[in-house]
Image (cartoon, rainbow, N blue to C red; front, side, top):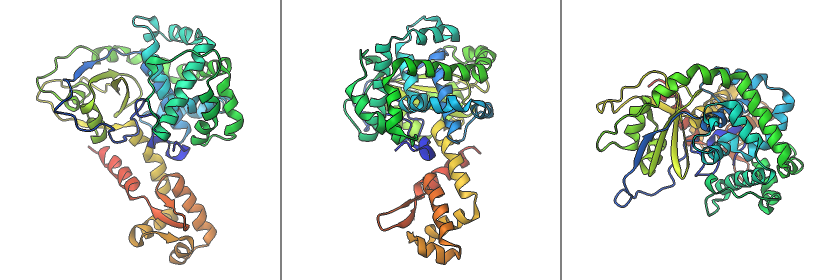
Length: 397
């Protein structure tokens, strides 16, 4: 599951985030489902701050990003903060869990929706019991995705806990192991320390705000407010069409399917997404975008440039990096042409040392482009390569 090299494949539990571009879990209930609610949400730091955390986590894991400034910020973070925040970023699923928590728990009308010191003060005021509840919700969300547990967790129902839950004590190491964090059994103890968790979370968010987000938020807030101006919903407008009308970006098929099956779709402007869209769900379905220009919201504008899903974009860097080496590319081409092969067969076909083949296959495995079966045969993952190629083509649209 959530290994660092393929972290963009799945961000967290199904109801928390679809930034990975995963297929819709809902059946076609068009004949019975009630009419959709389609609306534009006001910009809020409750969505923007954890989305920035998600972007930074992507950058720390060498994923592609829509904003080069975020990459620069991630590279400038102190090494001790990066290391200290590993359990937090894992249990918060990059930031997707925190995003659901803030959107559900920050009171309507709270100044923290627009003001970082106010939001920071609200987070700093979380009781240890509430932090335990947030950690429990995060671990439950990650494990729900991994094991398809029921019921699906929601941030609207976080229960404060006087002590860490049995589930966190049991699942904490597995959550960290799923993200390939070193020493998961030892570091899982940090999930049992709510004060340390809150302190490190605030240190990370402070670094993100001071290093990039604060300036970006204040510089773009007028544009965000303009993009959130009310707009009439054309008769018969689908969620996919509504997203395109509001954002000027056409959601990719996976996002369109999820949105068209959702009951309540909220399109909300934020910063740092470029041409990407970020879709996530927890009771409601949110679609985040960054306004590039004032979109044409006329009913006749049913098309737009492709809004590349954030997860799909993130997958590009590992895939293209893996294919950028001539030996690794040759391995992939051999597998595409001949099917699964053993290490020895690849060594004979490419006439290189077997240690070289083994090393390059490891890189390809980490990028999700090949797998090794029980018989030690290497098999190419055609869908992963096709997905990367289609995402790259979408950037030309």
